[in-house]
Amino acid sequence: VQAQVQSGGGSVQAGGSLRLSCDASGYTYCPVDMTWYRQAPGKEREFVSLIDSDGNTKYADSVKGRFTISQDKAKNTVYLQMNSLKPEDTAMYSCKLTPTCKRWEAYWGQGTQVTVSS
Image (cartoon, rainbow, N blue to C red; front, side):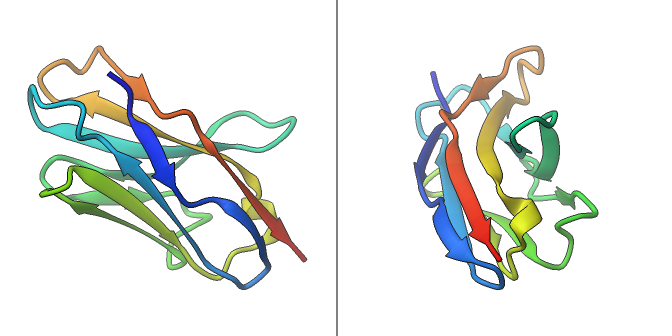
């Protein structure tokens, strides 16, 4: 099982927008929480946003008001809409699937690069 990053990512100028998607349709055992992380070169991986199985959301302070996480339950896909992008948002973005019935497990997407130029 792998949480697949299906689309999104790429290069954009500061102030632009991108949308990432993460398809969790391969996991059908129980509801899942989906989390986005990012890692910039030379830096540790950091939390970006979370949407749990009940639809509750959380955001890192650095992206609040600019990023929006959402889900399409019919497609079992989670989206990260990123607006007003800044150069400091440049990173490899990865999604993680955490089954609510097996919280000791985690399935990662392969990651997608986001590059924001000034």
